[in-house]
Length: 203
Image 1: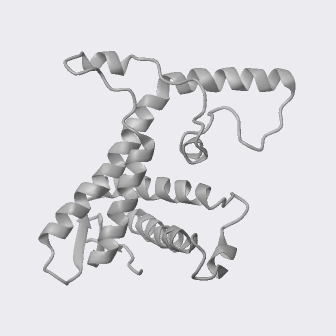
Image 2: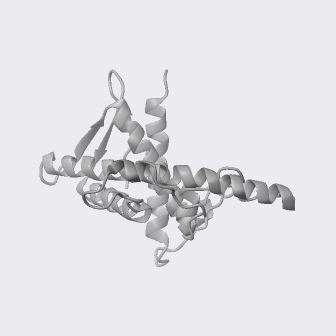
Image 3: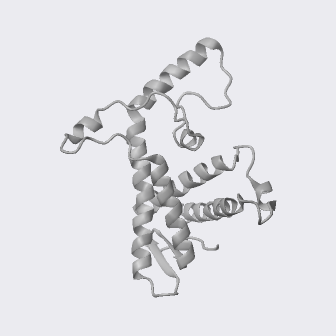
């Protein structure tokens, strides 16, 4: 897999993708949306404001990938605290999560589905067998940037990549290792994310 974002005149970014790359990226974005889930939605026929003011969860997600996407607000995973500070941080994080996680889930899911919709449009308009060129306005590019970051965090968690380890050793896995496709996707997404950041940075 190849590909890098290039800046567009006047802002935004473009990316050339072939059919295989479109399919892989779409599948990953769809899996991310399904992992994040819809969040708490109003019942059919119900008032959308009920969901807006509904309390969210107070505990971190059990799934490690989701816990990486929705970390505690007042305590880093490797932060050592005394019993009192630990209790205060846990309570503050629970309160913050209760009022913010549902909205954050909805926004992250929308970012992932934005990627899916854009790739569907690209695939529909590209000539058969020829690469399609995706063009993103600056605001749309930011949705993509968030989704790419979330994808890398989720995949990195599955691969047990830590903040201190960039996962470089995983590139030496044999092709027979079942993790190898996920490893290649992880580094491909990293390249896309890096070049997208570069295109959005002011000169």
